[in-house]
Amino acid sequence: MFVDSHCHVDFPSYADDRAEALQRARAAGVELMLEICGGDIARGSLDIGLAIVESEPDVYGAVGIHPHDAAAYDPSLEAKLLNLVARPKIVAWGEIGLDYYYDRSPRGVQRQVFARQMTLARERGLPIILHIRDADEDMAAMLRDYWVGVERPGVFHCFSGSRKLMEAGVELGFHISFSGNVTFKKNHELRDIARAVPLDRLLIETDCPFLSPEPYRGKRNEPARVVEVARQLAQLREMDIADIGRLTTENFRRLFRLETAAGPTVARATA
Image (tube, rainbow, N blue to C red; front, side):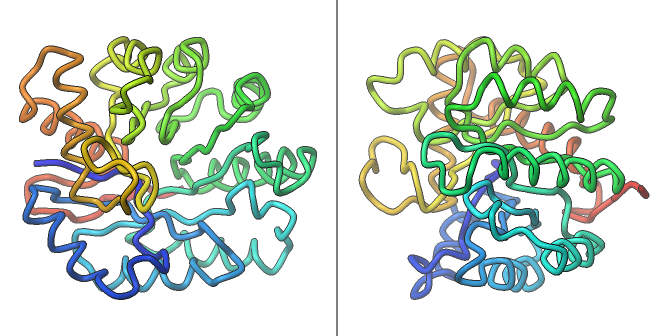
């Protein structure tokens, strides 16, 4: 059993075969997927992602405003988010964070919108899904200002930062999630970091349609390929792939309060 803890199957690249991609994931042993619904406000991805979450019993959702779209954040968008997070299958707020690589929104605006969304997520008892790119120091500082003492902190998604950032995240209670980039041949430092993450904080993801793992690099990624991420982590940790699948699935269910006995049903805490 495997979980894809971060996917974007709402993207246009799945328009012709979305149902087939989800079925391929199930055939590969992927029992749960977390669809990130807010990847591109301009093309209405919140609504597309939500439709997937509502129609697929094994797909859960997160909503939030990506740092690329921080400049578009306004009271009406916030009101929409607040309505959406009340839905039973929305189990996290995200992805949110800081991206100083592309700088598609001004950095000051990114920090302001990130802080606001952390405040709202905390008030509602939701873990957060973090996007972090070239912003390690500001991210660690803001988390210490806004996110200490949270019962279920969330996820450092598609981790690509420094060992120092990983250790800061673990100290703050976050899970660390790895994607296909951990399989790339030259990513030796990232693999060293993956070896050091405590097993009870480890997650796997695809971030599809991006970052397709070896041996599929360069092709559109999809949830079934999370198995290749698990395979790489199993090799790094000298474990069986089935054990990596089991423990990352348990970590995912525990973080997002998904019951195991009766299948993928939500056990959300009240805020």
